[in-house]
Amino acid sequence: MNIVVEFFVVTFKVLWAFVLAAARWLVRPKEKSVAGQVCLITGAGSGLGRLFALEFARRRALLVLWDINTQSNEETAGMVRHIYRDLEAADAAALQAGDGEEEILPHCNLQVFTYTCDVGKRENVYLTAERVRKEVGEVSVLVNNAGVVSGHHLLECPDELIERTMMVNCHAHFWTTKAFLPTMLEINHGHIVTVASSLGLFSTAGVEDYCASKFGVVGFHESLSHELKAAEKDGIKTTLVCPYLVDTGMFRGCRIRKEIEPFLPPLKPDYCVKQAMQAILTDQPMICTPRLMYIVTFMKSILPFEAVVCMYRFLGADKCMYPFIAQRKQATNNNEAKNGI
Image 1 (cartoon, rainbow, N blue to C red):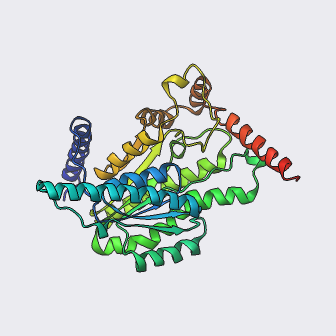
Image 2: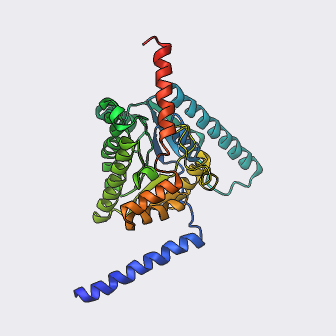
Image 3: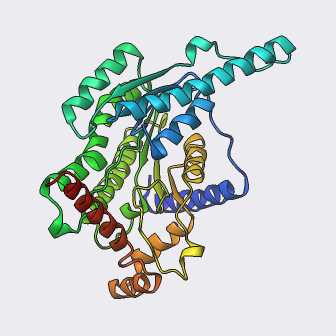
């Protein structure tokens, strides 16, 4: 095709992409079904991972839960089984009433499997992934959610904790994706969800290791998405989840300017996950919560660095992590004193 003609075609496609994006704001796309599909969630024992598990369970997905904490992971599984029992009871009631027009999955399909896995260890990921394939089947939806934070200033942070943050928050996405993507490519079907953070789009002081890990995983996700497009594997969807500070306790003590905080409070975990689920089930490539994060990211990209610093100081975002780090340091000192160290 002549390059001039191709240029106009590309221009039209770009404008059409804007039209489609605007349409999504006005008309909510229909959510796809994940019923009967195997959904694997890392970090499922607590926080957002647990809430993702419950949301997928309500949509009749077969769940595979990974977490380093066996007890908390089993607690999540118990909640999932309770949802499954409620679904089974509702199905039975619908059948008795004779109004069950939609296909009802048999109860044997509603199962949850738990695995104790340290996603920061490559071999542990590969061995557990092999067990999943043998015992459950191939994974259709992969939710990379597991995450950690060290809570130390750079010069006070042990190297081991920096490495741990990078392994769990970033490298683990490589290992899980390499484990389950090949089958997705073979059948041209699947969905990879990357739970990152707004701190993977813009940064703040005091959490260099966490920001580096989240920036890294955002880059990984974007490159993977482009690779799938280049390979014309349109049946494999990707969704990048970048929430603002979520009130899960992970960053307890983090504070912005008190006058601004009422307008930008920490996100409720339920709200964050429901927004992410809507994006996943409508094949939305990226979701920032709240929407203000899109504007912040755009302004960071076009404003001079000193202008960004001025904005950070006005919002109290420049040192927002300092109270959190101070609390973590105090907690560490208390534990050491209690243990007689």
